[in-house]
Image (cartoon, one colour):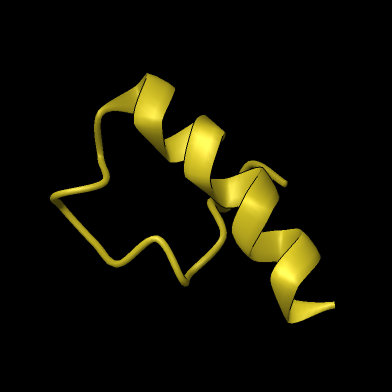
Length: 31
C-alpha cells in the first residue's frame, strides 16, 4: 500500500510543485 500511495503522490506533488515543501512520502490531503 505504501508503494501505491508513493507512486500516486509523486506525480501529484510534482504538478503542485510542493515536492520541495514536504517529503513525497506523505500523500497530499486532497486524496
